[in-house]
Length: 49
Image (cartoon, rainbow, N blue to C red; front, side):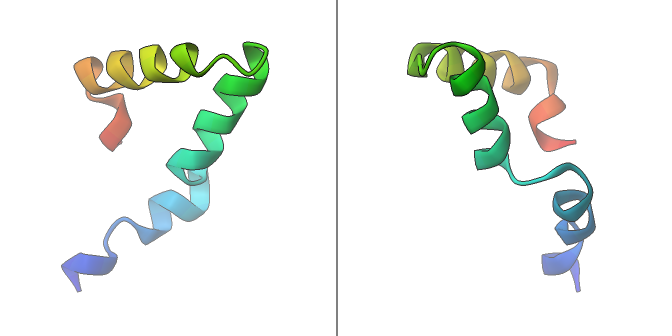
């Protein structure tokens, strides 16, 4: 059941697209802000938590 291991995390914190939408809305719809946030989260490893 390794395929389902992250389902609980997604339920608890929300899906990635939800975070991306929040970042976009907080930045006036700026998608560059979304990309910047994704890059920073990948660098720190927080995107996989």
